[in-house]
Length: 160
Image (tube, rainbow, N blue to C red; front, side, top):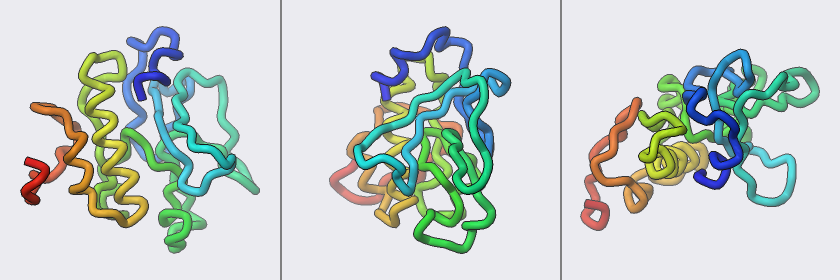
């Protein structure tokens, strides 16, 4: 998360892409850090994108890099029910798509608290996309952090 942020020019100009289908373009003024749910290259990589001129959004592939939704795949669990990416910041409405989804750090990407909040939110969102219990993510939860979409309190003994 932090490594990608170091590559963004004028980081302080960007908030998080938090709305469904909001792409990290210059026009939207937001940053997205996402994994493709169905990888298109075979190595682990977290997309960090802000200020892109344009992003392809057409058939046969949606190249969206933000919290994208493809309605034609909404009933397919193999594609996370149409949610193309698992992102650091996801729309609150995505909470219905899986436990843990819809988490988003409150800190702006340029804030010192952002990397720790982002790591925890990303863990919850990836867990939700893959059907893993998001309470496992409490191990990387930053102390005294705040979130736009507050995670539930931890109820298992090893994470408090």
